[in-house]
Length: 194
Image 1 (cartoon, rainbow, N blue to C red):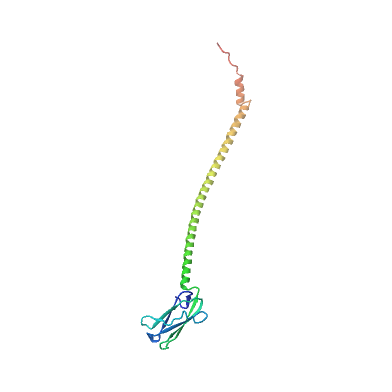
Image 2: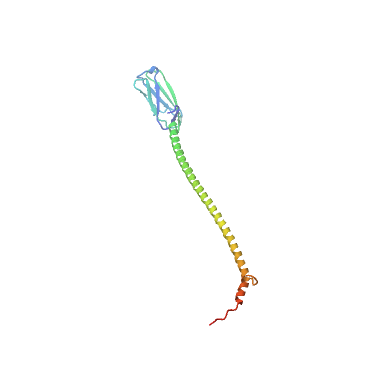
């Protein structure tokens, strides 16, 4: 627990070191609340010694935020009173750490989601590149078809010109095919012998 910052509603362990590590002493603990009024219910008539170390401990649980004060007295010989203050808040380092761990977990989840989105965007980008390639192929094919249509148009015009020439030649009664037809028609058929 960080020195001086304690969470409301959580037990606080208070320690007292006797002068010269004196053992077997009776040490009391008076607890004063955030308004600095004696809280007799939280006060302790005799703190517990840890083995035979001359160190004593007791606990109290604050029920309000603010500064709590504890006065410890060696009542056996009156030697070595001590006072400690405890800042009590709605949170402590442990609860902040737990909250940060929760936030960190949520950030990790968001990172995972963002990574998924980046992967999806990359996949979509790949598909767009593929579609761009297909579209480029279609444009190339359309250009090729357009070139063939232009060629066919040119050939149709050539055929049309030839047909027009043939028609003109057939219609020419002077020296064209029309004249030959007229000459053939004019030849008398020989009499049939019989």
